[in-house]
Image (cartoon, rainbow over all chains, first blue to last red; front, side, top):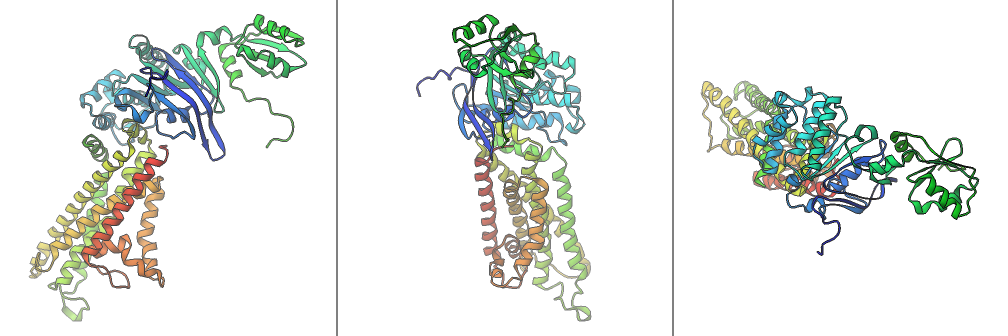
Length: 311
Length: 255
């Protein structure tokens, strides 16, 4: 095959990923790219389709349509997937009666790694003392560490972690942050971490992919989202025309409770100019004042219900 | 492939379940053997049963250890459903996305576990029979009466049912439902099929009946298969369930 732009070593690409369960579109035409050398936050409310998306990229679930690739190929076609990609899908993938060390040794055997690798990663995640205990006695934080240890067994170039900070104490979160930053900044690895709380990962990630209700919402540098996080508040009698006018700004327009509109992803100057050029009547135009978390919530909020009977 | 088999073997040996089920299998085998010897009047007092010296009786006693297949089918089911129950299916299929190979490894390990269960049950049967018969002054025709062959049948039945369990567990991923379903089938449905007109013609070819045929026990109302036929039929069921497991695991999403 001719080299595609997606065939960069360590790059994760989702192209038009769609997954339908019965009548529910869990993931709907989702496309994004995750670059090596960065920590990317994969954000969305609970039930947004994050885990389903990760499962499709990892080959555990077959997309209804679309495709996910890592280093340009489908997961199943990676030469040695166990040593290329490390993934954690919720910290529950343990047999409760098996010790931490034996859990890791099972997967050492499967991946053809020496058993001493199990002890190495246990030390890395700080579980050496608990290595011989059955997992059923582990706290959520310890399970997170063991799940991470499992993902790190093959010394992977690409890490996909689903809610890795869940259950970690502040000290653990700081430790995880340092580890992931080191992977991305020093080793140039690809790190994708999902979360439903932006504030949990905002100090760790440099890029974000935001989804809600299975659909793509925003992709870009966290700094850009921060720059626009104040957003712009607009009041207009013709919201539809206004939305068309600012469409070229790639900003997201959402209705606010008081009837005004919030524009995220653009400056007041750009919004004012776009409205003026399109002859859209504005009754109010001001810079908003919301935090990053509020911006995230607004981006992922349920759209206002359309008038008329709901289906 | 050898790596996957090693991994699957470790999964069995690093949890207690396999040992517990082995004890259960041994207890059930011993119960069958002891009950049969104890209840046999050895031809005295007009007992309706043939005496212990009869070849048929000796084979039947040895064959009763085969009932331990109930435990091996459950072990087979649990080997696979545990993966879905505790989501260890995720790291398993992440490390080896060629899912068919994982199922092949599981089938091989299940068969090995089944053979170990079978060997243990057969050894226990011999350990009970030999001194007991000696005390009664009855000689055992290990080869002349086909007792060893019956024991070999036990081992085969127990091993194949472990493989059947893998297929059942892929079919029905819910652990409790799969175990209860399999036991209800073997204890209730299959005997029921034997008493329904017309349908009962299929009975000798069902897994439980074929298993019984291997060990030389006549079960059901119709003439049963001979041991070799039963062996092939049960092997066919084992392959059928393994193939079902292989296909379904490739086609379906991993939870």
